[in-house]
Image 1 (cartoon, rainbow, N blue to C red):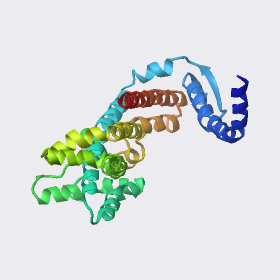
Image 2 (tube, helix red, strand yellow):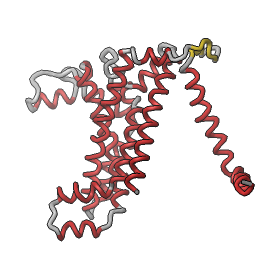
Image 3 (cartoon, rainbow, N blue to C red):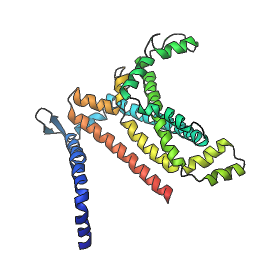
Image 4 (tube, helix red, strand yellow):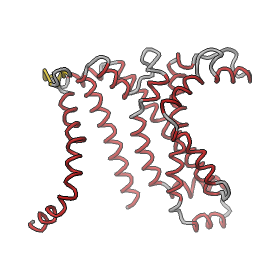
Length: 294
């Protein structure tokens, strides 16, 4: 017991500043957010004026806007996460197999990650404009795949599809880099054995590469899912939740609830629900990783 206390005393000067920053910028805001979710909050007076219990949570799950935003966020996650991972792994395997120009293609594939979210969102908004002025409409009509322009951003599902395309395009390069790092740990002997057994490239990919990078896949699955739940900038810049809030996702609905309607209690409750979901995903990934190791 005394030895443990002495060790803590020796370590405290080194970890103390980090613990203080953690308490100030993580634990306190988290606790304050949870407290606000159970009350009404007056931002001008910076105080909670009335305890309302679980009312904000009950209202959320009776709210069509919240359920629509939850649906859109889940669909965005289910589409963009595998939509980034599979192409990212394929591109990583292709780059791993080439000798010349590897650095050039790495940079080329990673460029979307480096681009500004705001600028690229505006570019996507221009590309998918209604009428013949939108570049996508113009190109598809030129090759006769469309007979008339499509109002991409004025329809619920086509607008959501544009957001999905954006999310996949923006993230594939980062996934590729992570998978390239994971592939460095795959023994070359495994691939040599597959060649001796006359395995086809498809068989090598599915039966050798995919199982060997399972831990990397689990890591990416968690990180990308958390990132998908945090989608905000491109939703606001491309669709602004239109039409009629049908493309809202949890982050921009939470922002609008807090800073447009000034309903901080409901916004805090939305944040808590989203935090619980993300915590569940993290714990699931941790459990699957440990099971894979053991």
